Length: 313
Ligand code: 8YV
Image (cartoon, rainbow, N blue to C red):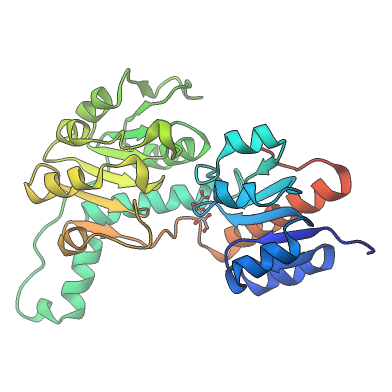
């Protein structure tokens, strides 16, 4: 193809994605190059960008790319990119909705089970040969307990359907009504936390939801409550979470996301009743392939037909 559009790939992505992108675009690898040289030589020609959802693209970089028209995000979250600036500049932004719902919801259920049944602790116990000396202390039952979901979007619905199969009554807090009228909606997150045993977070990140899971919510969830975060680290006040866990005011937590990824505070890593994952909810071969295809197809579609397939802005 003549005159391939130039794009900037912000974060390291798998080589097969680069190979496919290079069939359609001139690809600049931001993470591999000296920023000043790259911007001096190519800033005026770069029309597209590709980034991971959790990383986004900084406002200062957007401002240094005067020809930028389209940003394709690998992931569903768009909280790490300044959408207002994009709107003002007329830059189209897309994400990869829906293709990851099932895997993210599966991870939510995996964390709920792992914390309540102490799966990771039991695994450490078995590996260490401790079973030869003593029986593993008991855990707790999950089936039939009340499941609370914060953010009843598509992922929230998939968590609810799975939890319902465990005979768990479904409660939720969300700006929009759930598709199932048997699920009970609450007026605030604190009310929801008071009414449930599990609080599963599937709400978007960003300024509006920053630290909505605060000490008051965690204390309302109570000493038999379990927090599961498969949303964004920013929605939880991590210091408050650590404090309530240390004070025995919460039974446990299952966390796939953190405020300052990839750094996880030492006190969290030292708590036995916490299961920690390195942001892997969507990380299966099948889902990552679907996300990669959609991320690339959004850019190809924009530059061929003037429209992204799944635009957010
Ligand atoms: C990905 C995510 O792990 O979809 C999102 O918003 O955070 C995740 O699915 C991430 O985008 C890949 O780095």
